Length: 494
Image (cartoon, rainbow, N blue to C red; front, side, top):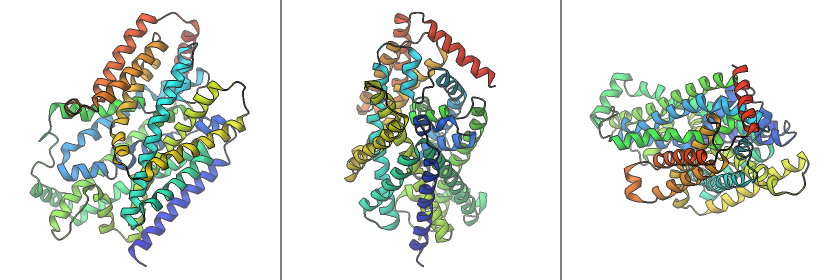
């Protein structure tokens, strides 16, 4: 059997496993809360790894190793910023959001939580929040499908469109039928695959590049400054890289995991698992790049056409073709885990936050679940249509969508959990300012090149929200009662 044959078998086993998990989750869905939030039944390990897998996408296995392979450890500042941001997110947001969403009308989405938290008479904040999620995530899903199509095209020589349809069909199937549980369980398995792959490639790679000393020596021959975090770095560049961590506070597909964990107490264990997974996975990605530099220095006859494919190339060099296929499945897992997470959040925005807000009479739970599935199908079809023609502008949108969500929602989420006086008008004003700042800053070259757009967007959102809230604040006994109840639940579960 050819190498591609072994690799294709590994990919097919992986895809079949994802579909089986979707079927398993389908049997556990009874109502909309089950479908959109897994009935708040996730354990700490599933919560931690599903949050990590949905977060990292293909950047962890391709983007980061490729950047470090090209420029050295100076490119690791983003990884450092993300790790710090993720840790702070688990500390400051996870336990409080889990408690507050439970006491505040048992909210199952971010827009419904914000609407219930501020007790506004109009649903404007909820609708605008849902629309922001809907628009950005439709493009996000589309970019993931593009990545899936390119993956099959580059790995197996398939048509881009055939690869796109394969990825779309499998992700749509398990997400549509199994909902949030299917997404979380598949993300958990995908997170394990990514973790094992990122540990194995650099670990076995060190043996063929002469161990630690031999690898370091070869790296320094290629670039004497490759192992330096500061050579070639600028203050603005380091700040911009570290600022990626600010984005975590406002990513709906990540923080919704905090709302789904069984108890507030379990967020502590989930944090330890999640941050441990993240540190080791990022270290594995960095190690893969460094081993790659050493290998290609020692084997001058071998050439790496695409630097972002260093993880895939090393896997095919080091391991049997079937194991190399499992490593390819890890790349596909990174892509699919993000698509599915974004699909379920987009579906919840459509049904829980838009449809239920405008409908005149209440429907049955089965009807809502059915509509949630239809929403996933509709969003998927639109995303596929956008992805059908490989469009770089879609992929370019992802570069500042992280900043857009972080700057629009991050300060709002943090203040809503820690400050009683934040108001609906303050939150809405800050969200709009944060989002607009990111869009403007990210499209003006001189500004974009000077500082990552999340920094001014996040800061201006914070300032505007606080100022407008202070000007519009009025005492509300119901808000005070819920705030106190959330604190009680938080401490009772410690």
